[in-house]
Amino acid sequence: MIAPRVGLFLGDGRLTVVAVTGRDRVERFVIADSEDLAGALAAELGARRLATRRIRVGLDRRLAVVKILQLPRAAGGDLAQMVGFDLERHVPFPPEDVRFDWTELPSKAETPRRVLMAACERRGVERPLGLLAAAKRRPAALTVACHDLTALLPRALPPERVAWAHRHGSSTDLLFLRGRRLLMSRTVAVEDPEGLAREIARSLPLVQWTRYHAVWISGDEASAWRAAPGLAAALDAPVAAPPYAPSRAALIARLPEKDPGAALLALAVACGPRRPLLDLLPAEARPWTLSRERMISAGLAIITVLLGLTLAYTHALKTEHYLAHLTQEIRRLEPEAKAAEGLSAELVRKKRILASLRAAEGGRVQALPILRELTDTLPASAWVQSLTLSREGVELTGQADAASALIPLLEASSWLERVEFTSPVTKAQSKEQFRLRAGWETPSPLLPPVGRRPGEGG
Image 1 (cartoon, helix red, strand yellow):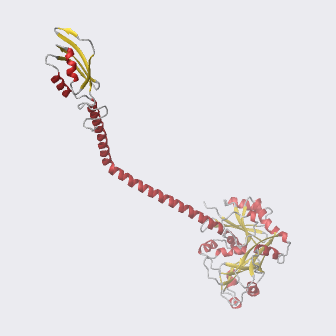
Image 2 (tube, rainbow, N blue to C red; image 1 turned 45 degrees about the horizontal axis):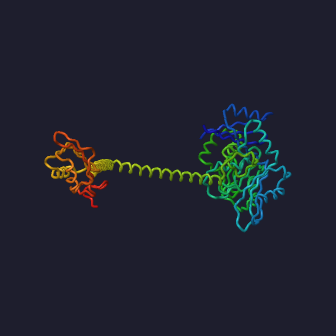
Image 3 (cartoon, rainbow, N blue to C red; image 1 turned 60 degrees about the horizontal axis):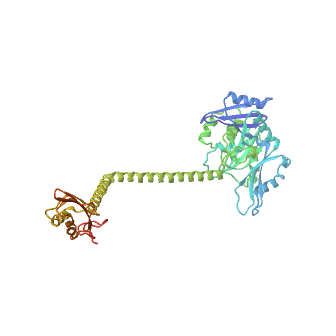
């Protein structure tokens, strides 16, 4: 729920309060002749369920001093200090009791700087602030009420010179505008349209005008004053009602007809900007708002964060796209990779079998040629019961007519040497039982050396 915007106009010893509670909804109430204004204000706000912590306050123009100061264009001069030094000449109360604010007006480079200043006595500021504090509310702004009337105008207005007369009670506030920009204000006591024309003419030198494009009249009896015969001729300009913005005109139409001047001022205060042009509220009591510089800094920070997030998102998107493409390629190549892995495993297996075969081939003795040699060497009467072949040599067990005759026969072999009996010769059934051992000649043409495969060269 959006909190209502509440404006309070303090004038003629009474409070006029207007609350904007919706797009086309307003509430107005007046508190007068009460010994406890703060208690009555809190009670009215509570009864109407206006749950707002901050209230904008508008002072009667008669309580403030508003003037245009002309200051020299000193190079590097502090304009705020210059305004403070020059202020004493323009206010009727001691400088230590002054609460003021200022804004610089447009001026040509070759002319003195022009500053619009609004000042009020300290007790004139402390009274409404104490009233809000007693009602358990805080101020949102403290302005001269008639200065907020510009908040009721459209944002886009031609830069024409306009005098705006707003009547409330026995006073008439004069505003001098260039488009929507406030250049000067006065409060005058006039009783008829002719007196208004004279006061406007007297005010023109203050804003350095010789003529203006239009005069607007609003507030109490505004219709009758605008229709006064001879007023347009006396002013030498068209007289009309202010061209309110459509959204503001809808709110104005819902105000009660009683005391329209004070009600319009309270509505203007409620609709005023968050950072008023001239704010008499002490700096320590002002609500924190985004200045133009802060808004620019915040905007740049937000843009930087958004760019960083966009960059991170783009990088993540590209990475995700790359990973998806990589996954697709892996899936496409997975059958080929598995086939290659199978071939590699088969190759390793076959290499192991081949190595085993080569090791077996390199470590065995070729028995057939040796058996053939022994068959040809040994006599026919000898026969072999067992034959053991190894890399170290040959062991023979058998029977022969003369066992000792076997040694020279075996020594004559091209493969054997160092033939000897390993056990005594015994006699059995007219045969001699023998056990012989012989070593291989080196190198043997049929037995490859240790660590060399058959067929490798020496």
